[in-house]
Image 1 (tube, helix red, strand yellow):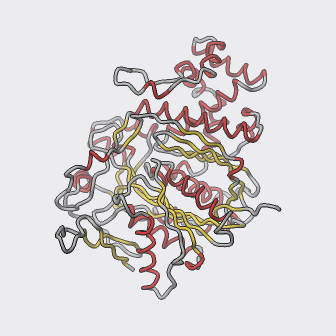
Image 2 (tube, rainbow, N blue to C red):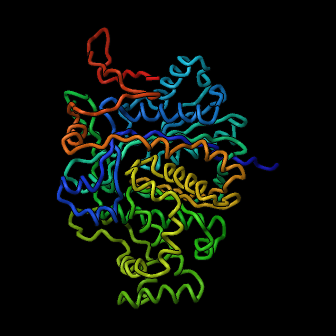
Image 3 (cartoon, rainbow, N blue to C red):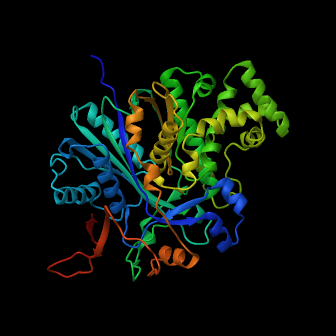
Length: 490
């Protein structure tokens, strides 16, 4: 029996209006704007005083339902991918409840009572795992229905930390169904990898002990992270997930990567996906044709290293977890490959084989910051909108997506663009969702970041969810301490 095509038919976004220009931030913090622009981006968004991942997620789902004329009664799977949840019990059901009440306020039917409501957590990969869960649901007991997966996160770092310029906030909702209108997803052809990496990027609950900011009551979710080590983990897990896909499909790595036109990857900041994919390209050259090996050798000679030594390193299978030691001052698992990469980055082929394939939607992403689980679907949304604006012909093209979550795990999933992609793309409206912005001053940013009262924010919510109040009662007969109460502002 032929398997039905299953995939993504729509995308919708919500990003908070509060914006920090990184050029301004560099002046406030005495950082170098040219370097930050090259490595990180242009700006990032900050969550508002009455916003949480649940308000952003629910607003994105409401937009998805409206923009794609979805019958809520057909939704039998609503998944939430996030690493910023503030409730250790409930998750996607919070979003469903908010959306149901807003739909009923507008005289519409709520989401099906028989809808599954899982939350998926694995750092920035939670949204991809949610998408895979939805696709499996649609292929089995949920056949003939529709599914929504919403990715929502708040990337927040301490002021003065190295992660501060890579902040961001927002949500992307995805509509999944049979006979998809945007892209078909074939999980059988995908690749997976995972390995525990101890100190890469963590959020231990100890950080929350006794935390309650007196004015907003928002919990600050600063991660424990080690930047250089995290880059090594990202690269290594990318390589393993790609190898899994190559083996499943019997692919020649070099020929396959060169055949691709468009690639979307997890994007914590501008430089990370460029580096990750470039290293994957160099590894592919190592197992390629004589011409491929000659190209790789040329980068080696310019870097002052022997090609044979580089090839040994590439097949060495280093134990990255062993680098998770405070005594280590060099967290690189592939130092010779990184030396060759620095030469490759200056070569003419770097633009054609790396930058051009990561180009669709990349300019828009410079103004979104890091959205954690929502970063990959946001880049996809931006890419499809750019392709439509430029009147590109994408129908039938295989695109490659790579999701990554610290800790560590990666998923490489090929997508095939549907014939109806233009109509589906016209309803995404990512650019429209980013049009309005409130540019923050240094004092406003500091106050908003620190949970203090902010003055002069000229913004009135409309057609979105807000936190109306936070529960404060902790008594024997009734408790709602820390529970958020929401309202839909129409």
